[in-house]
Amino acid sequence: MIVYIIIIFTSLFSFLALQDVNLMNRFIMYPYAVKHNKEWWRFISSGFLHADFMHLFFNMFVLYSFGLVLIQYFDYFFEGLSIYYFLVLYIGAIIVSDLSSYIKYHESPSYRSLGASGAVSAVLFAFILINPMSQVLVFFIPMPGVLMGVIYLGYSWYMAKRGGDRINHDAHFYGALFGFLFPVLLKPELFLDFIDKVKFALHL
Image (cartoon, rainbow, N blue to C red; front, side, top):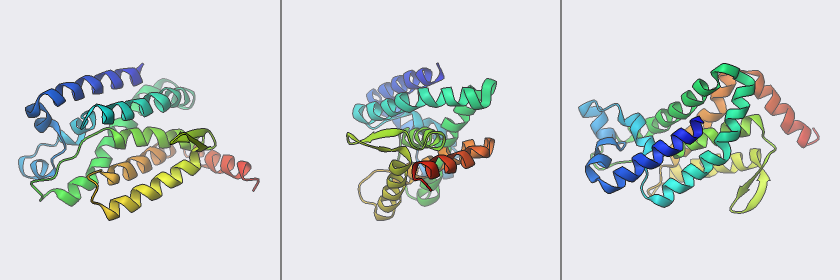
């Protein structure tokens, strides 16, 4: 249920902001305004905005695809706290993924960023932690989730260093790391189970 609520709220908020530039400017991640005007809410609100409908659809599709399964895993591992932990994972990833933008651009009046990509990356990587050998599609090519994760992190790190394409790859990278590490902090044996599953698949 919580996944559907996030999808509906994000879709509605993004749609309204795409029709109203003032609403968009009020809630987009704007590090300069955070630093100089103390507009700290942008660390969260920016994660519910999107640049266009394709951006919105892709993020919500990935959230739907992996979030529904992840909440079932959380139900198993954390029982009554599953929804709470899922929300902490999701909103925490929005904040963490925006921190690098804030650190880099808090003195840049022209920089803006938005989108749920950091939070969605966190959901995806929490799923990979729990089920690393599950097949995922990357441009219609099936591969184990753990392999996709390594490629994703490497690509995000490289593109963040390279820059120039107006995509916040830092948000993808740090959101993904947060998504992998947060469940481990809650239940450290998940990491040992992750290692065992990968080793078994590789016949090590």
